[in-house]
Length: 403
Image (cartoon, rainbow, N blue to C red):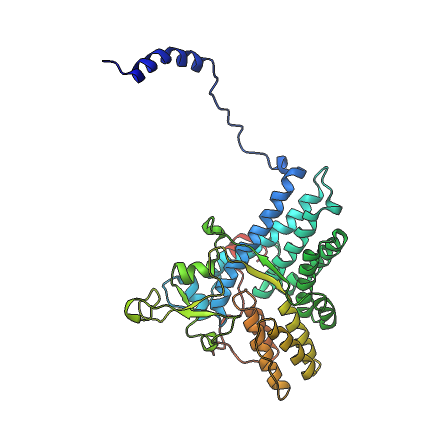
């Protein structure tokens, strides 16, 4: 006996066949999209989002690797590159990924700006996108300058790493001018904070202080991350929590307990046994500054600006002035005020405060490196031959005829 559904289907099939012959279901592949087709005003928001995304990747990657190279993180897995960074024996082949990510962030921002200038119908002079692009380029160059041993720009020769600082100062200045014209206060303060640090690194501490004084203590400008894809993940969270490849244990920060700027915890399994890392024996001290795959990483903060002003004061032997700025920074975290008996004590406090405020933000290598060069501190991790910056990568050396 034929069911009602089968009778309906039998009756409908001829009609469906006629309808199908009336539709053209073919698909034409237009081939690769020409690059020039993206030179439209409508494509510019995506271009700037790409700049921000590449910067986040570079910041996240370098926060992780520089934490291992400096004194912020320990490592107990069999990852080769991470192990080389932690041991301070970074060879060019170990630097391929971090070098490429930093250079990509810089290149995409700088060349994106040039591309935006040439787009017909795009109001480059007054665009908020262009203003943001300049600030992103500034942060990309600051990241590279603070972390690499030498600058290499677009296949050129090896140059002093401070070339990145010089480029960043110009980019922050242009971004600042545009942000002020647009009355974009957030971008204006990001540009001021970025330029303040750069001017300090170039030796112009008075100009750095002038910029830093215009940034509120509670200001923050972030590199953004997401749980959407592995590329967008916060790498430090992933390797410390999703996996257990890194630890705060064995670093100076393991002795810093209860500081909201450098939080960590221990993990216990059943029976209150402290959980170890992937080697099964090393105690896991898990960083808790980043608590999710989408945790952001600061690019600029008002608290750092207070510490820049404190350092500038110390460089003029103004201990009371320096401590006033340090204690203003500490107050933002509800931490008690500190006192320094003399200039040497104030410098010790300043270095510790800066380390805490910028913990795991890809800034520590530069601080240790510059203070060591000035004779303020000795070798970190005790070895005189400990790598102090990211060398030119092997891939760059093999592909660049000028090296």
